[in-house]
Image (cartoon, rainbow, N blue to C red; front, side):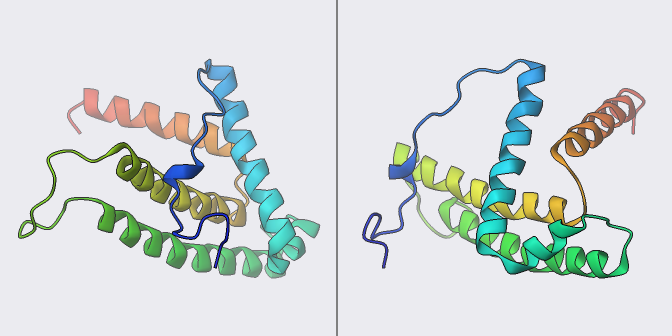
Length: 152
């Protein structure tokens, strides 16, 4: 049992750490997320320290470790998605309040952040850095815009 947070409520944890960003800052924010997640994994997960010793996706052993990380984190991400769904009014037979409270909204948002943790793990397991994720995202976003403009 967590004595600091006995009901496991995340809403009480929220403190704004950042308020505004320029495009250059966006990459730094993403880099910070990757850095924090990698530091966490290196501290608490033995498979990560082995993967990071020789981060070469092409080497068979590292690729196998990376794939194991992706598989484990995909399952964890799915569990967190289920927890997120339990925070949302998706059951047509159930009556829900007309608005979510601030704490309920934060709990929902923290479930999404839990999902982000596992998604970042999956990207790092696949050898994707923050810079590469940003570049891949921008490239795909531009392609999606192009497709929509052309009646995709």
